[in-house]
Image 1 (spheres, helix red, strand yellow):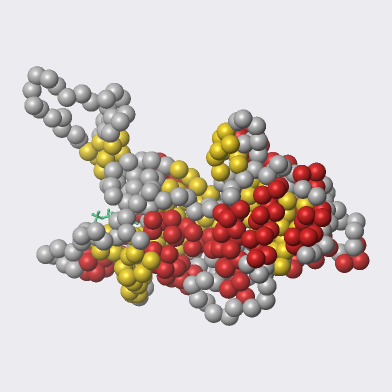
Image 2 (spheres, protein in one colour; image 1 turned 180 degrees about the vertical axis):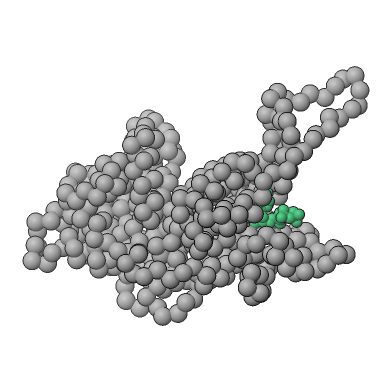
Length: 426
Ligand code: CTP
């Protein structure tokens, strides 16, 4: 296998020194790395460090080695562009397509995955201008990592720290894995067959408040949803991750929309789907019922009697059914692939699979991923066993297998159903 070609952009922030460690991780892993610092990055770490560690020439502007047209060649030939640290200024210039140095030129000419690792003070990261620039970049398919929280340059702490080099490297390798396999001829689960696609994944369990401190919840860990989002990212997709309550970290590079209740989840999923999605995968465990009138104050027990309050429940909307209806009524593209999950136990009226087949027909989604729950299966576990039932009558059994492999099998089934884009669309 040829060495992957990585362009490592370095922005002008104090965390530039950590990019030297990131560079080591890439070169030790066998990558060929061209470092492209900005002018101000060189004030923090000098050109000799980058040249010595990468074993390659280093340039910041477009005026050196002009005969090689480096501002076009570097971006075009790269398998991955990583920028660490990505300053507020760099995010802004990238979002607005400015190209006043070599790095921003590379960002405009690159057709490979682009990963940005921001680092700045909390006030800057949370400024509406930076929030808007980050959202715009993510919308275009650029992978922007969430910064870490912790000690910043001065005595201040908060979100804005450059993610540790190991975390940036892991996210980069996931993207490279997807991109590398895209060159291979197979339609296997590790190809970048979702490049240029936007997918929406819901994950975790909703919570329906009873009062300000209590809620009706469920046992979903969010692992399967997180695995779906991570694998979609690795296969090149832009991912909107509508996340209720989970026990696992958010996948790096996803656009995370945190929600709590079923109604919030419904609104977030519909908004993301209406904005244009190639697929929506409903892996969240959405509460079917919510308390009709949650108390605004904490419900107290009475000292006078042993009575307990009766809680009246009302139905929540079925989000998946809502998506199916939206598509039927033309508010979603007719080609949007809709995927549901069904947790079944099997009972005297039918087996897990029989219940799954019935539900697949009832829900009207294109794919229903049926898994057996109860007895410690599925919820919280790292492995799962499923049958992926297609509306077209296909059935594929997968597992027992890690939730990442289940996720890949789901994306394989989705990839077969999304219409082919011609290259001009991408
Ligand atoms: N779902 C949804 N909205 C709800 C409930 C569930 O969108 N209010 C979605 C889930 O995300 C999942 C699928 O519907 O993708 C199946 O959920 P499940 O709870 O197994 O099915 P139900 O239709 O609620 O049937 P049951 O009566 O078995 O609970």
